[in-house]
Amino acid sequence: MLPYANNLSATSFFRTGEIGDRLMRAVEKFGARFSVMSGGEITERNLPFDPEPRIITADEFDFLERGLRQRVLALNLFLEDVYSVGKVFRDKVVPEEFALFSGGFLPQAVGIRPPLGIYANIAGIDLVKGGGKWYVLEDNLRVPSGVAYPLTARRALEKLSLNEADMCSVGVEDSLCYGHMLGDMLFEVSCGGIGAILTTGRSNCAYYEHTFLAEETGCALCEARDLFVDDDALYFKGADKTERVGVLYTRVDGVFADPLAFGTSSPFGVPNLFSAYAAGNVAVVNAFGCGVADDKGLYGYVPKLIEYYLGERAVLENAPTYLPTKADDMAYIRENFSRLVIKSVGDCGGHGVVFAGGLSRRERSELLGKIEKSPRRFIAQEMIDFEMLPSREGLRKADLRAFVVSGKDVKVWKSGLTRYARSANEFIVNSSHGGGFKDTWVLSR
Image (cartoon, rainbow, N blue to C red):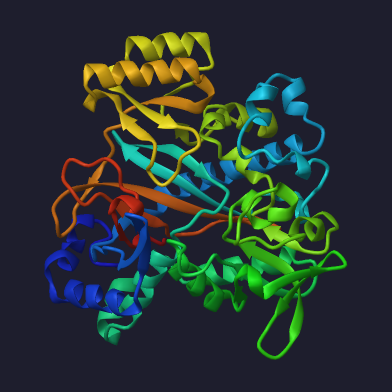
């Protein structure tokens, strides 16, 4: 066991010592990059990295693992229900119009069951810890990203000298198994043929991750121009041969993955991909239509879905959330507006998040008017004063994105992406807002 297993603050040697300096240089050499759109131009930069890892004890992670498995199981059962019999609506657990009017709902997917009945094969669940309790802030099921960055940090640690690497790994769960977890799941759902990862190219903010995961899994990394559909089967045009694709891990969101099927002008999709998927000739990860379950408006119903599908109480709590579509919740929002966090349902990456207390009286009035006019477009949450972690820049707010991989079994990766804010008073930790990342160490038994 690590000498600091019972004194977790002892990892401060990463903060000030030579090992931390060397680890930062090693991560930089790996080129863990993230692209940001600014002024109409794409700027690619190294994602800020802090060498002091976040530590999660074995007991604490056991608790998180139970809650994460439970949550993802329920969300996948909900998706299967939505696109088949719709029992959840008949039993009035979720208002039918609430789900069916979601931007993530794809009516074309009704009646189509993906391999193993799993829609969200890869889930990224965002959590924060406040007052000693963990809260789920958001469920990411469409194109969850960020796993490559802590993996890069762990690989960089391996590049240090043997004694240092041993000191930093004994008693910590191996996170480098993620590539095998992902590869095994892709094999389990494959319809026969090679695996491929669909990317939009270097313009995508997570392109570094796309290339990283292609290497980890042995999948072909391809853009839309490298793929075509013939007789309801998907093919990859390689340098010297054409191969049938059995599973496509698409990093292109839903309707943009097939412009023909969904009437979009996306240059990143593959015409007739949905037809091949509907015919059962290719698995698409994550499945078409899974976005209805990561709609921020549905988030408030997830504890009820867990009870409905699994007969269990939710292990992990939601942040206290209020839906403007409910009269009582809307009344509460009006009375307590200045201390709430307002989120736009359709935005992601930290965009559309407003701390009402920081607005002027006029701005609060205008935003409240927008919510009353279009209540389905927003949710409101209590502001959680979540924990700060030490970094070389001082104490900073930090969250955790946990990754859950669902194939024949539901597996929680024993690590995660810890994101931290770069400024002392910042609550938004997203990479698109300049946030940095840490490795996440889960202590073993």
